[in-house]
Length: 128
Image: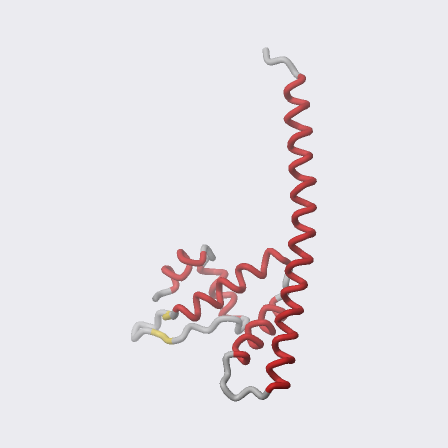
């Protein structure tokens, strides 16, 4: 699929997808004869991983590391030790994600409290 369809499916801008390509996070699987970027379902999956990591505050380097780790986990030539180390690395990212989610829930609760305070204040002011 071309970049426009990928952008629509991932809800990422063309500019963002191109940026991720420039940084080496996602490389189009092919190019058309006309030079258009062509992406596969695997490419879309990678972009979705990146999209989900970004609001949790993960850096581009962390995104790259996780993608390389999961790519390596899919390899057939892993010995038990390497597999264990890679799984531990993914578990570390999971722990970091869960910690950030907890922080975001706290922030969301505070934001909801603030909105409720404003609503209550507005309810005290008579309309004219």
